[in-house]
Amino acid sequence: MKRNIVIAVVTAAALVGGGTATALAVAGDDDDSTSVTRTDDDRDDRGEDRSDDRDGDDDDGAVRAAAPGGVTAAEAITAALKHTPGTAVSAELDDGSWEVDVLAESDTWHTVRIAPDSGKVLGAQKDDEDDAAEVRAALKGASVTAEDAAKAAAAKGTVVSVDLDDDGGDKGWEAGTRASGGDARDWNVDLKTASVTPDRDDD
Image (cartoon, rainbow, N blue to C red):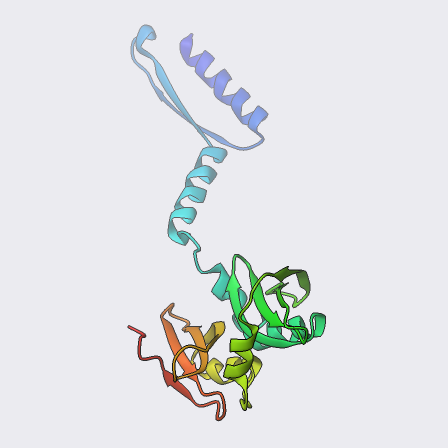
């Protein structure tokens, strides 16, 4: 009698779930009969869990966004300067967008955010900075722009940042790159020749 009930339950589960069901019945005394039912959905859920485990966490989205086919540092700088004319002093891929710092002709600072997949301007804001004189002094006589530095450093890997180093006697552009394997490196780009050399402080 209880075996008939088990079969009826399994059949109903298959019809309601829209898939197939596998029933395992252990027959003994009527009071000891047990059944285990597994549906296609159970198997699919386990497969998805295993797939998630293989994929792991994706903590390299920013770098992937700047990979071939995405917007490079040089392109982000070009887009930012088209929106806010001036001198680009830094560009960094941060929090899912390029952030480009621009020193306008009026010595006001602006941060322009660029979408890493389309190159569109996501927004811009005025910053309260007072080091315009130092930056202009560091760039006096320079022939290599931030965009040029980004292009030069791209030969070393995917450029994820460019910044002007105006401290001390070794003024120049600092560029950060990430190789396809995830290794991060820092480089110095000469303000006049665009030659790229390893950063002395890079471990």
